[in-house]
Length: 418
Ligand code: 5CA
Ligand code: ZN
Image 1 (cartoon, helix red, strand yellow):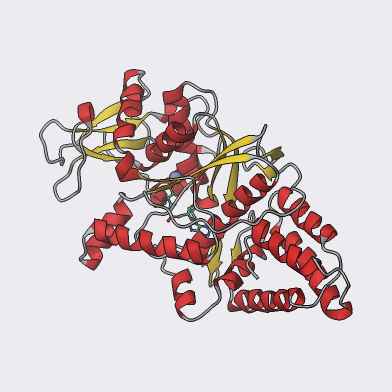
Image 2 (tube, rainbow, N blue to C red):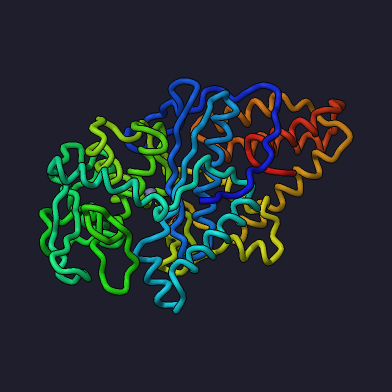
């Protein structure tokens, strides 16, 4: 899948210290890379609606991670998927009376434009589920062969004797190790996050769909020995991550709404078909961005779209600064004041770097790098820039190179173009 144009990343003297992130699973700060390379897999969009500010926060967060890792001298392999076939996409297309592929193509196009405007680095590999389907078949067959998956008759399928394939969570001794939830808590969210606890014929209510036999009116792909049908959600990310990055990956990323079931299941599938003890060394989860007191979500419809803000003339860099003002690990509620504050900050910074000289910028740049290397602490990084700008505007300064080098550093590691 085509991604979007990479923004220019200026080279700035010096480098970031070793990057550490707080692993959601252990709660510990861990190195984001063990040596001089890191593999990062971030769960991408389901393209049935436009990019809202929650999505934007997630992709800006992982953009920061990749920027600061590269700035620290680490070679990053960054993979992102698109869930370009799934029930919500088919349901929205049906509701709106349009072809599901047209809907996906339109929303992926808009996402690319939003990411470009926000200065988000594209992944090195951007993979749609649909184009990757041939790579899912062998791992699902393997799960069946080793007894970790099983067939469930699908009497409503379009062909007689058809079966769906499910993953048996009771076969996995490490099931639950990612979310660390009790079964009752898992069940409480499973259905609303794509699960089907009440499907007759399943061995355990939490078992996850791996392959869905073709039903009339649904798209289908050749599943080889699995029969025609389409893949389940979690196996897609497990297979795409493993086949493009190897197992274990360094970082699995996404919003914290994906911890269970998605990341729990993807990890379980991947451990099982790869035979490796672990899927990801660390998990980084973006807090949920809400609106009017609730998580912003396509199903609730309480959304602020990046594209609508852009159409209204909002500077995408003001949106970016507004997002960076919140620590990625915390849930927060979007308010219009966030955007006003982002724009005001941007204006101040722009004014400060437009002077003829300023206070020395080296310590500020070092503090920005240190803050980001410390679990992507963007509010702390912004505060350092605020302090420099306040001094530049109040007392000036005679370091003629400072405004330029600071502007380039902000562009490079914070992705903020002044
Ligand atoms: N396609 C799947 C992941 S494989 C998916 O969750 N798609 S999504 O379009 O619903 O979300 C895209 C990304 O944005 C995911 O990483 C998700 O966790 C994150 N996300 C969704 N809603 C919010 C929100 N309100 N705040 C922050 N991040 C969010
Ligand atoms: Zn995913």
